Image (cartoon, rainbow, N blue to C red; front, side, top):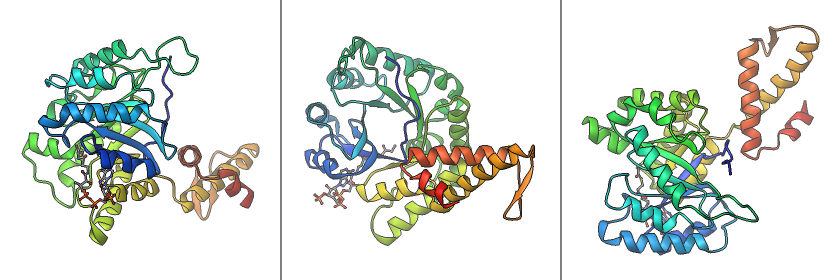
Length: 313
Ligand code: 1VU
């Protein structure tokens, strides 16, 4: 069974699998994607407990507010990855597996084949196995140098790339600064690779500051910076970050209104045989119309009532 593409993941919230309290907390959330974590937030001594917590959790009735349930396994080649996959692969509510520290096409291929081999769950009335989507974390210089190879592997299931800034900084001995300029090349390369390979999601670094006014401000600024580089979502570590990312990575009301006006005016211009025309004292031509159409479909995917905006014009 083919996997559905064009999934919206404005926020991807990590939840430590070893914390039953935090797993339960996700029942009350409104989130595009929750990644129940088996990797960095879980100590080696609690991996087995975290696996069975997540497995049990994903066997319970689906959470209505969480659109996508993902599990982040441990790195390919670690002593945990195979056991992680064996435990969670057949959970009914599993939509997606997040694979950390993908360094090559071979890493991704091994994980995808092992997941598919062990995913026999068919879903409602289907005869073939329900395939999960895959998100790959880019965390090293080697991974960044292999983006094209990674994106060309498991193409029917790979649905996005995620940038892990802390591990990337460790690998390159970078110091993270508030401006994030040290990550500019990596972030641009990842966003570009996602676009070139038509992947649904390009998910930006974690904002490690999450407390109080300062946390909100930093998160908002980082979201805007990521959006301007071409990211369409952000990793979150705390529930308070989720609404900020979901707002920032959806078109604003002004953006959606602008896009709707352009598409309406473009239909008229087209009838008049005009490829270039003016709106609000600015020249509009094909790439601007293309951007507006993309914004309209993104607005629809984010649940914005585009028809109501159309009726206003
Ligand atoms: O109000 P309650 O007491 O019922 O609940 C707390 C807390 O349990 C809950 N909460 C969460 N629930 C679900 N998912 C979460 N990620 C989460 N974080 C907190 O919210 C209520 C308020 O929490 P708090 O402000 O008191 O925060 P804590 O001190 O409890 O926790 C802070 C940390 C940062 C430790 C916590 O948010 C956390 O563990 N986050 C996830 C960390 C993680 O997964 N790190 C690895 C992924 S990042 C990465 O690998 C980069 C690529």
